[in-house]
Length: 496
Ligand SMILES: Nc1ncnc2c1ncn2[C@@H]1O[C@H](COP(=O)(O)OP(=O)(O)OP(=O)(O)O)[C@@H](O)[C@H]1O
Ligand SMILES: [Mg+2]
Image (cartoon, rainbow, N blue to C red; front, side, top):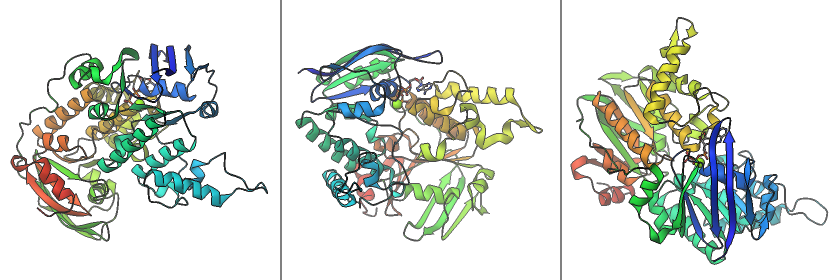
């Protein structure tokens, strides 16, 4: 098969940080090419150069037999390349149809926008993806997963020859991922090439034809998927072997810390009841949309609730806002980090110390040295890849931004942590560090409520598990009795 894309000797530096170092990368026509590597390895940067979002310092790019001189994103769209970014790129206040046809709306003879045609074409695209929503729907009212599919619909609408997907599956349910994979297979049959970035190694073998591994901005290897295996890929990514996926848990749940009773919210949550103990990791399983995030937000005070008693150490708690929670040493790492977790335009350091300023404020002034030191501690533990603490958060790679949000909550010294999808977008090596950190927290008597869509993570890390379906708890399991099947049947709505 011929190469549709050839990128040669690509270099890119950001303020002294070498993000890409002489990288060669090529993709064949009609193949799914997986691009993989640790957080900050340079995957998104390489793709942003291709899409015209970043300029390379040096290198050459050939696409479909022609040398490209990429000046802007429009140029690249016209050549037949579409990119779906890790950070979404839709305009939240506009409808789905408006987003898809932005700047190239179909016109009537009169020169006016042909809304009907635009909606029909959008509907066709959405149907292809089996996304049952009205094209007039305003994008910001869609779930993260739905927005992801709108991005894909948009790429399809360009009739692209090459589609780049930067961690598309991170926010999708298993069912939606299945659908996405079907769409990818269909695209392949039409000779469209796909570049697929993911931290899920299983996906490599499900859909990948070829694989390229980057590490610290350098090309490690490019090979066919059939010629390698999972362990070898991890070794290429991390530079060493990783023996275990989950560290051993030694802490045992102790006395009752938090008790939730009768927590309800009309049409969202129904009679949620559970107990959280000192030193416990309580896994919360369930499908996307089962009410897990809503439960977390209601407990934390980010959303209102109709009823619910919360006691902490036997005392009644009145939580009406996140402030009340933080005062009582309850912290929430939100699922949607991009929108709720980080403050763009602020430094990495300020983002981390934001929720716990009182810890670094000495008298009235912020104690810079103390802040630096404390933040540095989490930098080391989580291996946050940034030139220093003072750079803006948006200059970090997607996964490293996630780590910053995690650091922010660890820094608050809470007693109870609610982690909503804590390892989403995080590479395999760093995941292990985060699990170890969770163990360390619980060894010190802290408790963690861990919402996760990754079954192995739920099974590998939880002492107890609750499973949710349609806003209700449908299953409660102890570590010893946990099986994948039990979780699945409860998640499907069967009460256990
Ligand atoms: N706009 C920018 N300004 C400064 N540095 C940047 C910028 N964009 C990326 N970098 C740096 O370039 C390096 C590579 O980042 P990149 O986003 O390509 O990583 P990635 O492989 O996509 O990681 P992840 O898996 O976390 O998404 C990182 O060190 C990052 O901080
Ligand atoms: Mg990235």
